[in-house]
Image (cartoon, rainbow, N blue to C red; front, side, top):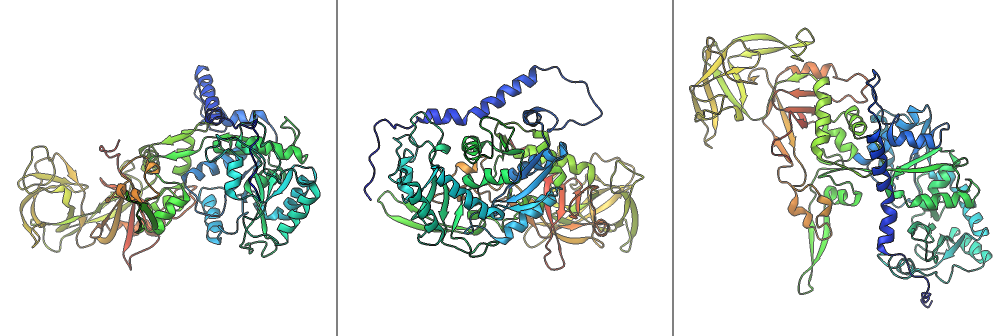
Length: 629
């Protein structure tokens, strides 16, 4: 088929025009923020403020103050990430606040990429965050009705079957950057009956993937139209993999998101279709399709769903792209072209253990790290909701988690890198059970027994071989206090192992002199060995999305200390008491055991063990690292 000649009067919009459209949402957000700042500050109320009772979400409701019906519509082709937590909180929370309902709708229109593990994980994450869907639905519930409406679009002369290749379609839409001339393909004006016959042929298996697709007949050749979402979008395509997890082998063609989403919203009588600003330009095609099919009144929100867009959530240092996370999880094979044109292939090993690795910002990873769902929702609430992009430093996320945990978890003593200390003044069989509260701010609250014995473990960082006037912990000849112990100790001597590391310290009791510092400790005879994992940022830079992912250059920026494993760590036996009690915050939605390791950080017990040994994941440090920006 000869390539059509672009008409002279079909010059596409400039890049500036496209950027202007994309920036409308951000400009609106800034204007709204300034308007809010100009208003008088309301008096304090006993009721906490809500992102749904003020600001952007309140204005969205006031645009259409009807019985609220929202939906969270994920594609079951991967694991959810922290940005989805905001989407879940917004859609379910908006419905709950206005006494409405929220659907969990799986956009299962691409059987090539969908797996049962993703369906299950998505449902688990919604439940983990504390929400229950009004109904769980699927786009595939409506495949028959969607197909019939696609035929109706053809009969209305608003859709046609196109046989152009992907490259040809891109050329028609102005080329790779959409700045060239736009023009229609030769199939656009084919007779309605011919398109109808060809569409049925697609359905019946005449064409293979890429040989035919149904396109909406929008405004591709309008030189004044600067919205790519109106440039004859694809509505149906052939997918070679015929078997669908719910419809089996019935269909050979599947609808696209652009065709399906607005129609499923209408079928489920969604009142407010809330999505991120990347779909801002899609609002035009969303309304256009509903109006063509008489599912929405033109230029009115009275009939049919109303789409509005809020800013998505990004966290610095995180990778949220499914494709890039897959490279970290599975490894990758990349190609690089040298200066002489030689192509070399490089195999990159995995950088993390799986999709639920605690260093990732997938929701399964965040949960495994031990972050409580309530803390994550509190973080989203603190940020608020506007139609501006929200990029937050990871330290702010960690600060919210830290504040939440400080109020809700017990304290225990954990020694990550133990050195043995022998208090020579105590007999070898000495054991004194100290009664220590789990929360020092509640001395009359729940407590545990902490055995004091002759032999203890302290952390290696709390001892120095040579005294330093600025170091107030243990050194030869200097005294230090032991937390919850009625006396202090002074190091009298120490010995080293064959590797030259301090292996044992001998000390004596000091009762008359008050120490300048106190350190944590664990009894050597009643401690529990554990493996503790401490986490730092996965990448050394704050913007890993800007790294070279195509040729594998991103590996140069991986942080070699993103995970520090303390294999010899020991913890007090009070952990068993906490585990038996299945520490669970009131209103919580999981049973992870969490605690504050005194002077160290907040930890959670990993779901998997190393044999009989408990594995601990550090949720966050006890306070923000002074070295972090």
